[in-house]
Image (cartoon, rainbow, N blue to C red):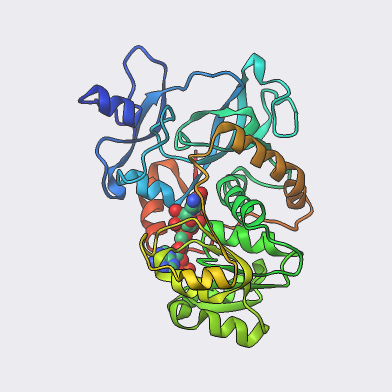
Length: 357
Ligand SMILES: NC(=O)c1ccc[n+]([C@@H]2O[C@H](COP(=O)([O-])OP(=O)(O)OC[C@H]3O[C@@H](n4cnc5c(N)ncnc54)[C@H](OP(=O)(O)O)[C@@H]3O)[C@@H](O)[C@H]2O)c1
């Protein structure tokens, strides 16, 4: 069913991308007021205008991310100038190419109308069409469906950035991936393969058994992390962790610091478990630890382009060889975005949820 939402104010129109009658409309998820999953409706927004260096993509599938839930509630606004429509990643077909986008793909390639691409976005994915910087579009490996491809960009690029680029995961390292059953977590586990000597995965008890297939070598129940993480790593591996990718936050900080080995790196990218905690500076000094914080969405276009280029060169070919795989838990039609959000919020899946158009 199609709803036409009438913006009450210019501010609402700008924030939630509601269209004026003279603009070419397209279907998208619209939100009149922030709130629970049911505030999302299928409505109409203006089709985006192609900008410099960009592609216009007909969206076939859009990944659902934890950040979308926060944005829906009004707690994670899009960066200035970006679409107010939800959606940080899509897969679809190129339907228009800006003249100056030629040669601006991540590996210097030129995309053409009809190409299958998956893309990292700062917003706008829950819609029929989206504009995408050519430098943030990746060709879809031929064996993957659109839904599988839409499960890749945000999860794998986040994992790559924080584990490899910032966390400097090195051959033989011991890695810890918290909330390892999440979209980002299942991607991070796979990226550890062939690099880390041991991969400790933490998640809720019912999900732990499923994580070995993605590369986990040790499993820790998320309820035990604050009390036993360091002890169980040191007891079984004989040393602390070299890199910890933390998708939880404050409730894990003390355990993370205790678990790190000499020169260990802790990369914090989420606050699901709180934003404020006490930091043991003595441990930081004596073990010469590094604590890093990061967000991907707010990075500059140049930084995202560099990330996509590195990923396209070093990781993308591994999907075609079957060494990496999107972890697609469930798909929903766009019109059932509310059900998709409700399911993600219940922490009920391993991997990603994707909306299909
Ligand atoms: N900074 C960045 O650039 C960036 C980018 C992408 C994502 N993120 C963040 O990374 C996290 C994962 O994102 P996602 O989209 O992959 O998430 P997701 O698929 O929705 O999974 C999140 C998982 O976190 C676990 N969890 C939730 N609350 C928890 C708590 N209080 N303590 C311990 N575990 C908890 C749950 O796993 P179990 O049921 O297995 O315990 C849940 O399934 C989110 O917080 C997201 O905002 C940050």
